Length: 473
Image 1 (cartoon, rainbow, N blue to C red):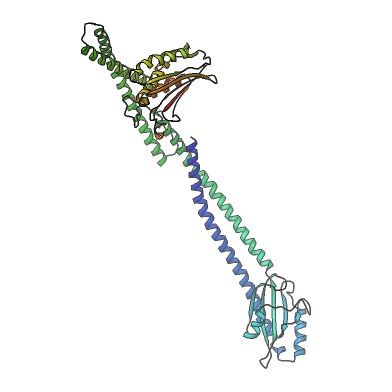
Image 2 (cartoon, rainbow, N blue to C red; image 1 turned 30 degrees about the vertical axis):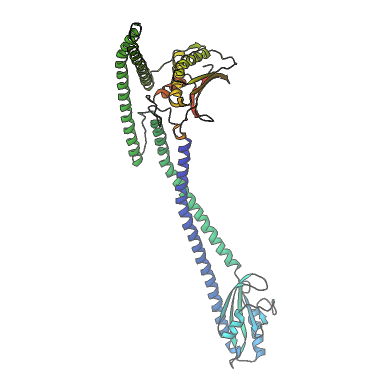
């Protein structure tokens, strides 16, 4: 479930990133474009206004320029004093030396300006503009200079309009802030609507994933329900159909195995009985006796396989039950080890029982079923790790649990197969004979007792199987 949630979160993040990311990128471009448009509009309007004023003023002063310098100078002072827009625009009259002769801010207001458009206007005899920082104050300004040309063609100086761009810059910033807030609002709406929409997709997807995981773990027949009539409904219906068919096939398989197992038990019982009866005849020659021993051994092995199959069908149908009563679990385990140890010694495998000095209390359990678990684990250790010629077995009492450990010294289990070895019919890369359901049955029995069965590769080689059973239930 954690993995499903993580993947869903990843999909949500990708969805929101792709949607919100595109909107954000486009929005930033739009904000920059709108801000640039308004900046260009405001600045061009200011420049056009100052240029118009400069042209009009120059034409107004054309008659004075044709008079003497004193009259011209006095006219500049008078015009500057009566300039109506002095609160927002400064009007300056500057001589050829670059000195202010009159200003709407006062007769000698401020230092002589040193912006480049003044000399350019005198040189080009045309109106020149400047947009940038004032050299003396560092304030951003727009200046417009127009040459004052005497009747003989001599440039007497320039009239100059200059204004601060502070208010315009504030307006541009305000436009940018408003556009940004609008963008954030749109982005928030997009994120919220996208989040709501993706939830309508991810919620049923998560449900389908969880139900599919249950089906994969063996809960065949599980059904998925969705409230949307769309592609997700089609997916859910397909999985539901698959689940039903798998459940039907599993049921047919279990019924077949159960019937076959019951059919095999009768002839196997007869074979076992007659082989034991014939082996009791002391007059039988050695070769015939050896053949009967093989028949008896193989018949017993086949009987064990049939028993496993029957237990498996009970497990599949939920019919496996326990006959629980207080049991000396140490005694049961020791009897199993000693009984199976003699069988292993015939194959050259030494079974070491590691005794524990700790007292192990009786526990409520089904002794017959647990003996089946111990025998199956020991048999697996012999089949898959017998080449190590050694098996260690021990029982202990730890944290109010009875812990049984059985270790072989064989090649171990490939790491990629460890999560799969307890699955029914799974044999992996092992070449040992068997049905592949023994461990699945063992795990079911242990879990019915409220315990756990784990397999891992032991340090130094081999496989370690650990069965943990609660001392009280």
